[in-house]
Length: 299
Image 1: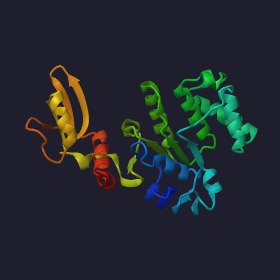
Image 2 (image 1 turned 180 degrees about the vertical axis):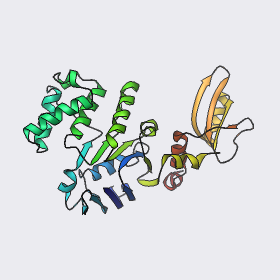
Image 3 (image 1 turned 135 degrees about the horizontal axis):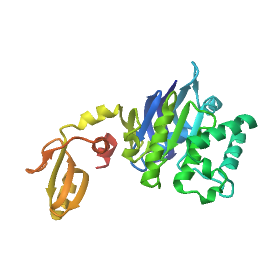
Image 4 (image 1 turned 90 degrees about the vertical axis):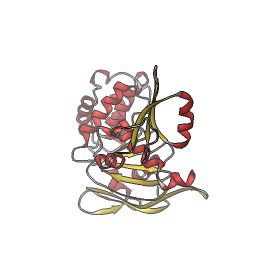
């Protein structure tokens, strides 16, 4: 099972490209696609989901021993695809069962198979007790769980979820991450987000995108090793913090009674009082985005 993205570019206007020469091979497991807002994540997801076509390059899908160009034969991928877009919408007057039955019919599932699958999925996403309630009364997290259920109706080999935890409360976000981890198994899961903690506990590999370019793609532990020895912490003042922001990549700050506890990613010791700290994935993500060629061109 393999999804191959080969030199894909997407042009929206004469002077604006959403993606540029993006190349990536994706295999079984959870790929965390990280990038700032506007980095090109949703553009890439829409191309992979055959919602839009690339301007240049191609994407091939090999799910059953032979590779197909998804732009030329989109139905071969669509049969194996589950997709939760960023702007997933619902019909507020339908309940969860009615909504999933409607989508199952659109996807071509027969009635018996659809009913069995819906019963299974409502248990998977923990919505059995709310199955007959109108969707308009669902919380954001419950609507997202309905979205995951519809994406899984055809037991897809490829599952794409785009910014799935935006607007969720912390408890719902943790529940969603656990569900994604459980679903990976023998399928490809692409989790696109700008929230590092969403992929930290689930991703088997991470791709970082910025300004439409692939910055890096590697195992989480290798990304962490890249910033070991580059993360520093110390206590500073609010006045000094302003100057620090102009010269260093600040990963986080926390104001305490003794001053501002600052965390900086730097190849050299940034302050006499600075001490080395263990790197986090957030540190690594910021480091790679800040030092990507596209970011440096804009600096």
